[in-house]
Amino acid sequence: MSDVVEDNNIGGAWTLPVSPKPPEVLPRIADAEVARLKGATGGAAIVLLSDMPVDNKLLDMPSDGSYVVGSAATTDLIINHESVGAEHFELVANEGQYKVTNLALLQGTWVNEKRIRSQKLVNKDIIRSGCVEFVFLT
Image 1 (cartoon, rainbow, N blue to C red):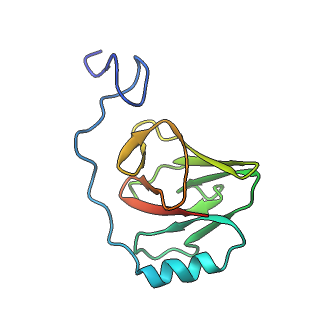
Image 2: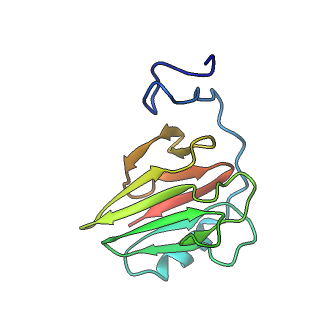
Image 3: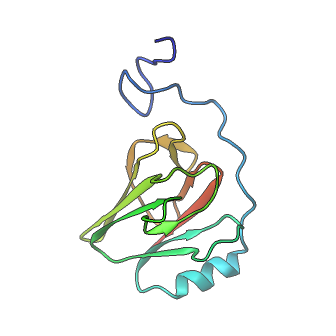
């Protein structure tokens, strides 16, 4: 039980210690590419910031619904990278409000370099899962 932390910012007595330094992230795509991808949506979206070869770099999020991001083929946005869990995080949209929830217990999910359990998103928040970054845009 030496790995148990009684109190930390992701909550609870049964959580693993928060690493003091997040892992290095992959290089980012150009701002023009982010803007082009965002232009293809009608509302809120997350855009893959990390420069990596994937089929889809965008998850369009209408004002209501639930979306899972991870490496599994059953997720809404598939990111095939060793640092991304099968179902890494969930995005929930409810009446135009958006929230991200960590589903990867060991790897964790980070918003603006702060490890989170669950957090409301605002425009231009940076979400990181493992070494892969996304930007939330409304």
